[in-house]
Image (cartoon, rainbow, N blue to C red; front, side, top):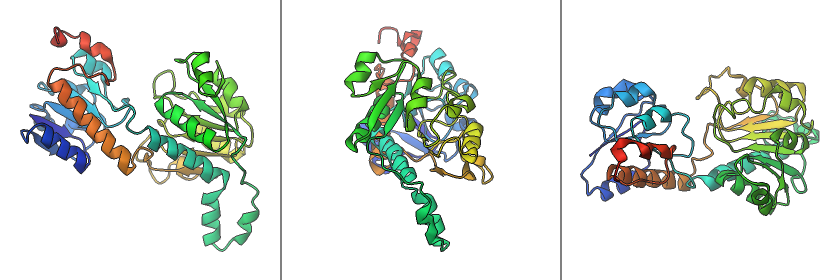
Length: 328
């Protein structure tokens, strides 16, 4: 059995893979984000684990022995799922493994922005003690956080926010009003209305054709001038150009992003040079605990698929309609 990885998973994941295969596994960690650069290794690979990388149709088509693609995370926009499904290759994902880590990261950004911590640190180190009078800090208690996307991460974020006394407004096109209200959230059928009323907007949806640029110039213009925007999902859901302009113009008060359209961003990327914006390097899910859970869950899923089992946590369950899964 052969596993190729764009980058190595954590030691705990490697050990699990070896233990669960009784050591009968070849593991190649390429440390390269594009499988097209090592198609010689891919030609007899049973599994490809994609971490900080992309896997396009060409790489999939030129991996004739490939049985499964694993993603250590819940997002799968970096993999050509359509092509994989067409060939009967499940794309394993790890829902639930990083919920708490991403939720805590989003809330940490809310705290950092609401207390003006970053600017305060930078200016204090410059000797500007008067930054303490910037009048940008505010309390989170009693504020309304609008959660766009109430999947596992969105729900966990809402729970933490409720714990610090915040009010929750929720939007999710795949959840009924009753289910959203059962979470203790005010229901919104239209996210654009939620954006108008929220003090903080936090985004927890996948990047799709429907969600790309869902928060752009028009939406930002309707927000409170004191509002914050948090994006720990995917770059491109919040329009980057519009966000930078809104921050420079004072249309909104601040923003936090863990994700970029171009990763890693170049030093001259506007998102790295805009006031009242804090950034992190797509690291919301990179806590010690989440990394281990994602790796071990991914290994479990990949091995199950290789054994011919219909693992439930895949990007597109239609893959099991392929003839290669007949009778399994």
